[in-house]
Length: 77
Image 1 (cartoon, rainbow, N blue to C red):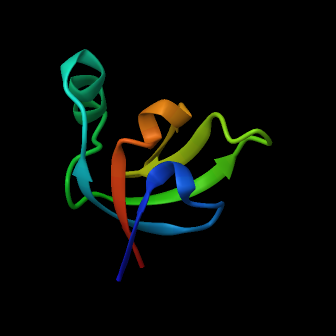
Image 2 (cartoon, rainbow, N blue to C red; image 1 turned 45 degrees about the horizontal axis):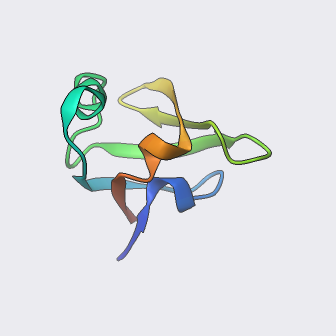
């Protein structure tokens, strides 16, 4: 399987989170929203300029900024 940063995925691609970089309050907030290792995600929409990115995780939709998404490694299915 191939690994990529979440901000490099295009609409319709899906996979599992394998790791997250970063520290501090932003990292903790992402963990609290369900972005944990092993969670399945799918890219629902990407804005025309690439920011924000809307993903579906654990049955709900979540919008992330490009800066947040580039810290998440995804194994593409």
